[in-house]
Amino acid sequence: MSNDLKQMDQDSIIAALKRVGANQPCPRCGNTEFSVLNGYDNVWITQTIDGNLFPGGPRGPAFSVPSALLACTRCGYLSTHALGALGLLPPDETSR
Ligand SMILES: [Zn+2]
Image (tube, rainbow, N blue to C red; front, top):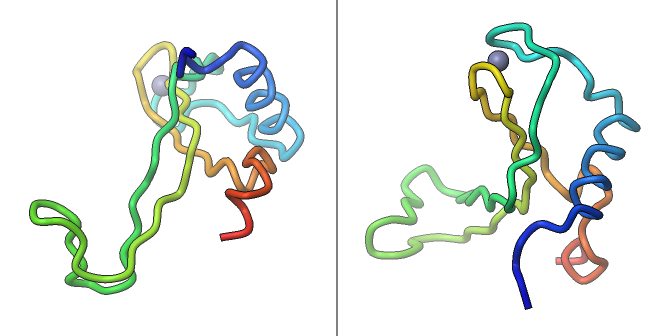
């Protein structure tokens, strides 16, 4: 089974961003075209200031925020959008 982001997922991300009004141009260059990157990001969050995850692994409580990444097609600026905020996480992912 492929782990590639499916077109249906890309369409869902685009539809969710439109639904919440995330339709402003690129903050760096003003371009209005973006690409949904073919994969997800997991932004790691620690709950302590010294909770450095790498190297050596987590020192404190940590969790990740599954996210979609969009890239400006002109300058490559990356924007990160939490899938949970867009209502795109499976039920078991949002109940943690
Ligand atoms: Zn740009």
